Image (cartoon, rainbow, N blue to C red):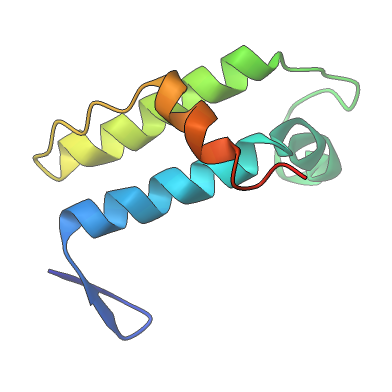
Length: 88
């Protein structure tokens, strides 16, 4: 069990939270990367295709899962379903 902000979470809860956050972030990732250009070495005018952003985030969530000993098996289709909660 992990403790996050005083809340006890199991590994699956943690991965679900990270997945939800990744889905929300993915919708504004391109703008965020540009806005935070002082923190990276990316050209200010970069336009990262949405499918590449989603692939990277899904791969990273699955990487976190594997580091925790879990084959989380998140797909971009799962991310896309989760994004619907944040689209307005």
